[in-house]
Image 1 (cartoon, rainbow, N blue to C red):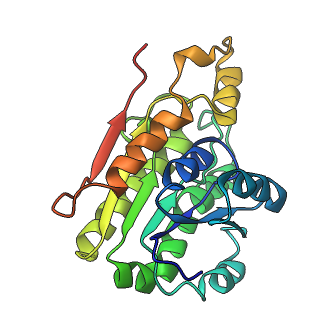
Image 2: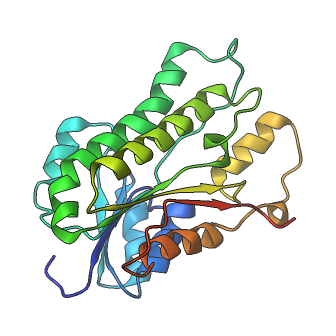
Length: 228
């Protein structure tokens, strides 16, 4: 994709926070919309116009990921929004559930970033990790998910120190009105009220703030909480 506009790759772009981030960046950036559901990505891309392209790939497939990134030689923005969350106590969750959450929430993030480092360095780019309030504090029943998000925060902190030409930001939203939040509330046994939670667009605004900060500013961490 050749254009004078900066290029952004957003994972998890088929819905929720990822789709909202893509919409927030669309007025100023060319977009690669990352995710596994090609049809859903196509629908999002159609709504954003010709400068948004689906980028369907399984982020946990190392070979597919390497192939999908090999033609990206300059990248201004990388937003890691894809993630999974399965709640349960230590007694309830088996090893495979722990592995899956770390594979998607941490390992895939690290590998995609590693593959794109030359392109990010070429653009002196920005990496944003959409984390969670669970990446700052863990609660009973949240152990596996929170551990993966603590690890994601550690990854971002390490990358920030290792790559001085890049800006690296962790965004820690509170509860957001998404499909994942519905699963969380169902696990907790409560009634779902979307008005109690952040809108995906509010989290996207925080991501946009990190991406568009003035050149002298490096926003390392943003915590966003619902007002209610």
